[in-house]
Image 1: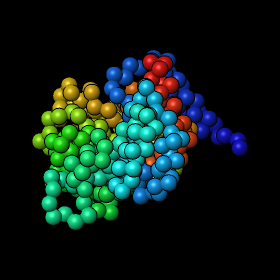
Image 2 (image 1 turned 90 degrees about the vertical axis):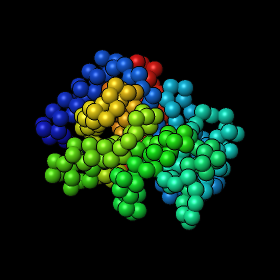
Image 3 (image 1 turned 180 degrees about the vertical axis):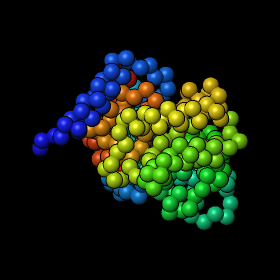
Image 4 (image 1 turned 135 degrees about the vertical axis):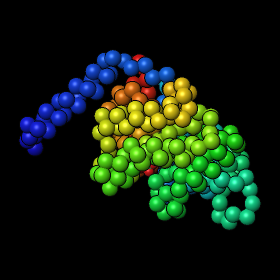
Length: 279
Ligand code: PEP
């Protein structure tokens, strides 16, 4: 298909930026994470198969977040495979324990081998009405109990179009991190309009937004903010991973759809691992 001059120039500029940043060999001292969010997908048999097929990497931290009932079998499959893969929950309750039917506590997650937990995913904000205050309680409980929270933030399409992205992100960050002085968490920037839509954010937009997120983190936590990994999430896949990996403030990806297939997820891991080796 013929390209218009405008899109040719846009692609040329984008490729030049990505190439130049790659050439500068930006030093990322932060841990790179490739995290799978399976959402409400996969059977036990599919889980077993996934961990047989997947590869881990020395260069990046790989974490898989299956649905709750698959956590313990996943833990055993990882142990059997002898691969270095972390395990995380997709949600957690803020209380230590008690009369909360259907909920899962931080100690329960740890008991079945989890070290991580996703908190404040936009689907939970949307379907379970989670707000920043609830996210904050969950983050505090996770940190108190030694789990690493993966805190999700992101603007909707309407908020993006009305130029509210920075306001939304700073409000979500300040709310989620209220009263917290630890930096032992991960941030996932997941623009809601990019999740599951195939409309991924360009690497340049994601980089610009991550740099903004880091300035807000600095206001909250000072210099510690430099150590916090900020991941991009939203239709990330094998084909766009290299562009994200070349960006100085993109410390990995949180992957939904493309993490369900072991080959695709492996492809993303390999792209980021290669990026680490060339630095
Ligand atoms: C997600 O829901 O965390 C996500 C990033 O989904 P997808 O990769 O399918 O857009």
